[in-house]
Length: 185
Image 1: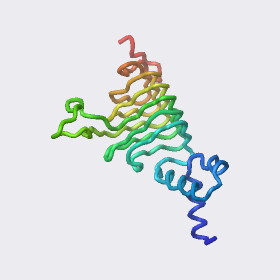
Image 2: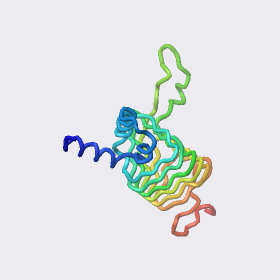
Image 3: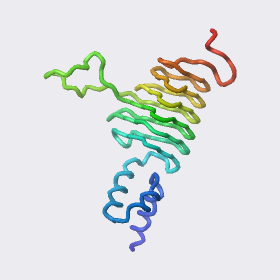
Image 4: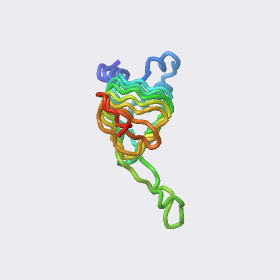
């Protein structure tokens, strides 16, 4: 095999998520090539990221996931302009929805003059070492600070400062991670 081609394939295989499992199951070269083509579009996902049953939609260049992050299941939806950045060493629970796009609530009904594809797109930034519980919804335009915890079933519609614990619908600060209790204020 040509050394350049061999080096390129070796580099691609190192970057794929769960590629070793696919190789054990799929022996057909054509099928393997389709898998390589599919996963190579997510080049901004660090090779150490572990993904469970996660659906990703939108521009692949707009999904950035840092080293050592684990996502159990859920949806990650970007827009054509909006990006989702998930920091390093984050733990994200089951059924978490991270959506950087949404429909305009004032123009939700399609008409002939206004098609249904009117979208609001805003970046979502999740810092490093963030822990997100199960069944959480993260709305477009939200920034979650480093070392924060988002409790299960929360709906995050506003920014979360670093080192805080939030929960509820909508999510609000319950505590800082250094002992300051916000609930009694």
